[in-house]
Length: 347
Image (cartoon, rainbow, N blue to C red; front, side):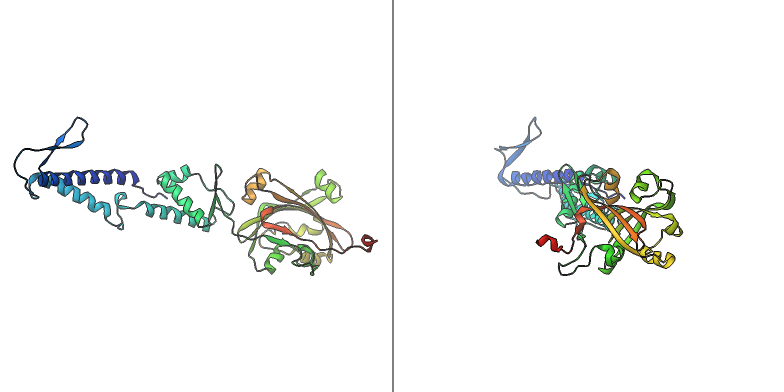
């Protein structure tokens, strides 16, 4: 899409109009006060006292006609309001800023620029929309004033995230409900219970593969043990909240291969299909800076911290069936914990 911008043309035409108006007024004064206009070597007009005939004000003369009608024509176009299909000369600059603001806002609304994502540079927007750099800068400043974007000096413009933090854990010290798995069974169900719209986007299709040395060590199985891998992103209100790289024992969850569309509650599915119940989980949390891939998937900068979590889940017969590595946008997560204090601590 290109937006026609006649800023430079309008500036020159308005200057031309102003000069013609000044010359015309000077010409009237020359008739009224017996001043003659003499052209100098520098193309400026300087007044010189006349010793000629008495003053006469003759608006209908040929000299006036030559100046009057071009001046009226240009001044008319200067103040003429914008008409449908009008050319760049009569389009006000504020209107062009409005158009750029509308275009960028629509792109953000359509999800072309997600929350936390960096917008194209001023030069790129200028070239794409065919407008002046000043127009783009004015549009970005207006978007910032409307709390739609954040402008970082020497860093660019970023779409502002309207989302509140997700509380992972009990909402009150008097409610020992535990973390997201204890009652809801998953992050998705916990968010849906709060009335928030969620979406799962698979980065890669689910697959069955050998656990390998690293995952085998984390799950306490042989490197040749088959596991089901599910690599995905959880989105809340269309905003990426966390990346999950999960590995499950294929002997228990192999039937989930290829079932990447929609949401299947894993713990419920496991109990219905195998009779096993998820009974215990252990999580290890760290805070760090994201990798380049993680920053891209979460639409954040490399300088914005993430929560790094390792999770293990066991069934009621003490079978470790899941290991998940979670990377979450730290700015959108708040973790709370509730636990009992042993009597030993008071002795």
